[in-house]
Length: 272
Image (cartoon, rainbow, N blue to C red; front, side):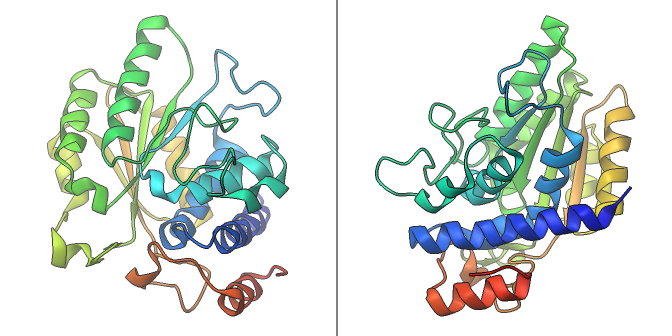
């Protein structure tokens, strides 16, 4: 597999994230940048989706449980051809299709409106059960933040997924170690993530969330695993790709100014 190609696409996704959040003057760049490689691998290789028929019955579905990271989903959707890239610069503006959190009624390719943490994984469990009942082959993919695991509703959903043996469900934890107020371990520790999922009856795969070889191997292993839902615990860096944003909680929900946006885009390898 040509991993270099996906690294280049992920760089384009990161540039699009910076441009969108800068244009909006608000948004969440840090957790969007940390998830860029994971989301790129989904939209440009793993998932059975079609921009020309985004409602086809056998499609796979992606649910952004950490809905504040909408810029990464919007960037991937635009670059994949679901809507024009120029629309990204309308993020969070009045009348825009691109709300601050994903809106299934406004944005092509968005399967579920999310933002209230914990609801995305819960909805994903319901979708996976529905596909089982309807005999549909489509898989359900959901991306959670590690800080999101502090929500009790998450563990109710995780318990239900194991009970119903939802091997058509893949959860991905973007484990960057930070949330809006600082380090997870200082606010409400969630480790050990892998052991907790195992205790709840899940198949667990731990990877470097910025290594495409590991990402693709994990997605393949999850697809082939039967009898249990799978979670990929992906170790990432908040703000990945931009030196002054990397591993900085302050960039969780802050837009770059002109100078910062230009520097960030240059570091990633794009043009401002």
